[in-house]
Length: 155
Ligand SMILES: [Zn+2]
Image 1 (spheres, rainbow, N blue to C red):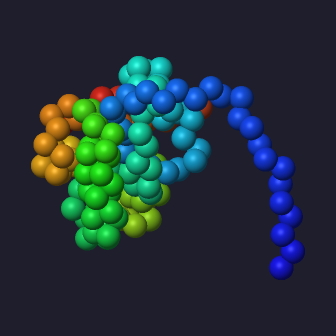
Image 2: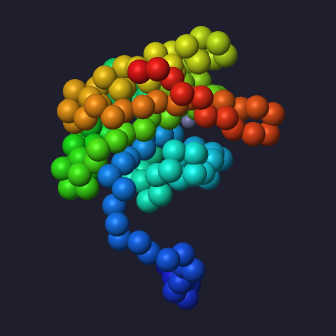
């Protein structure tokens, strides 16, 4: 196997070592990664937040048998971050048209959104139980033509 090594790349972004003590759990879908960043950093004022990204995001914490392995992994990660990074606040985000829901859970349209919102409530309760944190909030990212709007969901 021939290996082509790329030259080192130096990012122009400055590094700030201060922690924000907040984490977000959201879907790893790369089409909306920058939208999540914009919402969390500018909408909620959380620069440098810790990211827990995986397919379905908080849907993995809602007790679905199809995601039991992921659930265990995310709980472990969260407990680690709470302990090591002293997290105080957790943000959960679900998004419209999520493939975890359409493919793994075989849901669609209105029913899918209802399950996603119920899952945010269940996930918030699981996060509270395993971390003892009370500052937990949830949002649903909705498509509005070519824009994404983040609506808060009561948990
Ligand atoms: Zn998704």
